[in-house]
Every structure is written in structure tokens, then in C-alpha cells.
Amino acid sequence: MKKIIIITILVLFAAIALRAITYTVQGFMMANKMKKANVPGVTIEEINTRSVVKKFEAPGRIQSVSRIDVVARISGYLTKSYFKEGDIVKKGQVLFEIEPQEYQLAADKAKANLDNSIAQLKYYEKQLIRAKELVKLDYISKSQYDQTLAQRDSYKAQVNLNRSAYQDALRNLSYTKVKAPVDGQIGMLNISVGNFVTAQSGALTTINSVDPIYVSFPLDAKNYTELLRIDKVAEVSRNVDLYFSTGSKYAYQGVQNFHDNKVDATTGTIMMRATFPNPKGLLLNGNYSTVYIYSKEKEDVPVVPQIAVMENPQYKYVYKIDAKGLPQIQPIETFGQDGKDWIVKSGLKKGDKVVVLGIQGVIPSKPVRELSEEEIKAIDRQAAEKVADENEKESDELLKNEK
Image (tube, rainbow, N blue to C red; front, side, top):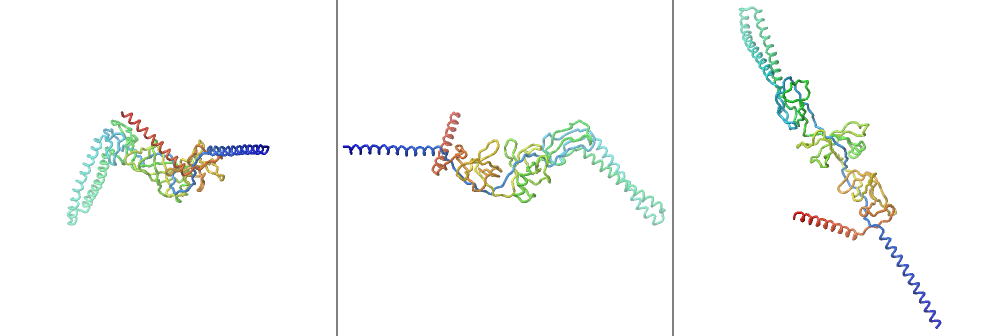
């Protein structure tokens, strides 16, 4: 009996001990499970390089290739204008008329003087031919022949003088029609019809050439040095894109074909210029824009997905995985975009690993768990279903509004 009691007690203690061990193991497993549940799931990608064309941003100002002041070259009353302000005009097109009567009369008078001197010259040329024969026959003296010759030469000079006066009168008469010296867009009328104008009156209006057109932009000296490093030479034509202040892109691409020979000591920039086609006149002289200039050659550079990049007021950054497998904040500098990736200027190199998806749950120096392919596919499916649901709701709303 005593033996049975002892065995019973031992069995009871063993059961209690086994139960305690079971609770301990279950508690440990539960704690481990909870710990894993608190570790954020992320995707991690290795940084690679890509051969890309680098681009650099700068503020641009649109400038006409030529800006011509239209001025009066003679004095007189401005009697007519043949354009509307803002018109596109062609070289040689008549813009103004200055009262022509006075200059027409001067031209007519000069023509009459020329005709008279020509008639006199013809008469004395005939007289000279007769005198030449008569002096040979000794019917007139040599002095009479010399006198006829002198008169002929005098009228020949007179013809030349009157011809010059007539041509000058015609020139002044032509100036009564003030013509466009170049193709371009005409500006505001500075002196209205009816006023008396002279060569000292200043510009009647101004013509700005339209097509092609210049865009000048100050490029940071560091960026210019980077361009030289990539392209190896300074004298190279580089592509340039232009964006309006509204953010829309200009349809035509320009070519950078000029750079200044010095760096501005005040701003630390070098002035560059691109030429753009402007067939529709959308680029207006004096307007401001944003330009992007591209390197001529490509370069292998690190790239990082845009969705992996966070930003604060001081800098852009990523979560880089350190040697212990923990995420750390890594500030980076970027050099523009290439598709869906940022081009990295500094902060990352090929082979570095960064967190891409799941950034929101990452805490620096705290462990993360890399998601499996199945989990990633599940997340993608959920995202696709969410987008589909939102599109369906939007369609339903549109149908309701139409009804």
C-alpha cells in the first residue's frame, strides 16, 4: 500500500513537471511568434549601375536671335502704317509710309536735270566729231577743237553728277516706304500716324526675329565641369529640353551650341545658349522657362528605385542594409531620373542593398524580415484588387452622375 502511494505521488509530480515544461515551451514559442509578428516584412534590392545620359537643370530665358529697331531715315509726316501690333512680318514688307510728295518732286527735278545734261552731252559729242574732221582739213583752229572737247567733257561730268543726284533722290524717295529689315514679330507702335518724324526720332517700332530663337541659361559651374568630364570636350552640341512655367514641355528640342568663356564670379555659373526651332511662335522674347541639358555621352552610374527613396527637408535618403543585416538611414544625392529610377550622384554604390517595399514599417537599427516570393505576389494581388475596386467605384459614380 505504501509503495502504491509513493508511485502515485511520483506520477503526480512527473505530470506536474511535464505540464510546467509544456507551458514553458509554448510560452517561448508564443513569444517568438509575437516577436516575428512585430518584425516588418520588406523587399530588399541590390544597387546596380546603368548606362545613362545625365541631365542638368537650369533657369532659361528666351531671346530673339535678332532684335531690330525700325527707324525713319528721312524727315516727314508719318502718313500710313500697314500692320497690326504683334503681326508676323517678312523681310522687305512695307510697314510705314512717310509723306512722299516732297521726295517725289525732288526725284522728278533730278531726273529732268539728268535728261538735260544727257541731251547737252549728245549735242557736244556730235560737235566734237565734226570739229575733229574740220581740224584735220584745217577749216578750224586747234583751239576751237580744244574748246569743243572741253565742253563735251564738262557735260560728261555734268551727266555723272546729275545721275548721282537722281539716284540719291530715288534713294530718299524709297525711304518714304519704311520696310521690315528682317523676318519676325513686330512690337508696339512707338510713334503714331500723323506725327512728324526724323532720323533722330528713335524707333518707330521693333521687330524680334521668331524662328529660330535662342534660350540662354546659367549652368552651375560644378554641373558644367561634370558635363566636361562625361563628354571629354567642351565644343560639342548637346540636346536641350524646355519646359514652360506651367510645367508643360515644349514640343521641339533645342541644341546647345554656345557657352561663355568665363565663370561669373558672383553666381558661380557659366552662361550657355541653345537654339530652338519656333515655327508656331510659342517662344516669346524675354519669357522665362526651365531647361534641361543632356550630356552627349552616356556613363555607368548607380540607380535606385524611386519608391525606395524617402525625403525630408534636408536631404533624400534610403534605408541601406548594413553588415549586420539591419536597416540604416543613408542620405543620397540624385542627378535626375531615368525611367522609374533615381540616378545616384553620391551615397550609394553598386552592390549596396536597400529596402524597397515596406519602408513605412522600418525603424533604423531594428530587424526587418525579407518577404518571400509568395508574400510579394500576395501583396501585388491585393494592390491590383484594390485598384480594380477603386476603378469600379469610379465607374459606378460616373454612371450615377450621367443618370
